[in-house]
Length: 479
Image (tube, rainbow, N blue to C red):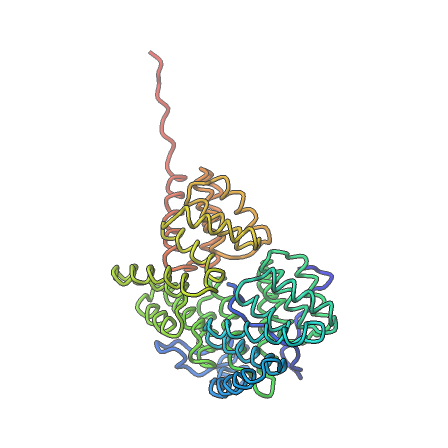
């Protein structure tokens, strides 16, 4: 993080002021103990305080009321209103905001399409220089649909039109991070920090950048602050609270602390019982512990809520590990089908599809072409990793090595990155480097993926066995 703008984590205790606006979208997406105890039923345990098990705390998990019914009623009312008066830009903006909230709550892309229509109608009625709400809604739609260059340009314009609004700099930083413009993102986050230090959005965005730069403890503190700030609000939004708990679970999982990760995921489910992300993450924890049966149950629950290609791919792998090959194949077919489902999915899921195909030895040439195409527009470290991994599977070893260096350049502590680096080094016949990366992956999070972590262990074992084998005696060719 740019040290010129880097904050110190805010204290958890004392009086906390809610401020700022957090942009939660489909992309917010990264791998990052308020708690419950283990149970086979999601969310069955009562929450406890992360700072002391069993102690009463305002941070303890409890189910929060949802307002989906009220939200849908508001959307219906505003939809009728703008139908009769399309130039009512204020109602168009409110409609776009309500639809974006439903996207965050449900991951249903149909709301995203309608939000874009409302934002564009608002801007047609009243142009951006005097319609910040319309331009902000459009930038959020673009970010959520992975049109990051457009989102960046519109967020930058918002910062120029009104440089006093911290959330505009946060939106700009979001897009810059996804585009791989890390130093520019640090500057935008620094501006946001200077304008609103106690904002929830400030804390979560700085946590995201800290995670990318391998500063795990800093990310954890910032996310914990965001959770405390959110819970301190008069009516804590359950989706935001659940998101913070889920992200704290991701931080714990990424460093192999599966007990803490499970507590956070269960707390997220207590807060928001239909949180598909937390349910899927809980399944991944159970898989890491070897409980494939419960892992399948959690992933099946998540997949019933929303058809997500990541859920389908992991569920397919779990079925494969359970010997349920017909069901595994059905899930793998579903991954491809979801990727072609709507006009947004081509942008949203290109990278996931490329990685899925590389993981499973499918359509190697197409996977590499898709990963390369996305990297041209979005040169972040995970884009570089996708090109590296697909290039390895397509037989382009030199490209794989070059792109893997770019993927590791921030010092991100991600077991999957180290795993990919290890297999690339093994293919390059560099066994020492391969062993180092694979050991890093497994030391960091030994169950980072139900299927790929097993490949990592078996590959490392073979490399260690080869290294330990005694050298063959030299043949004597003298007569």
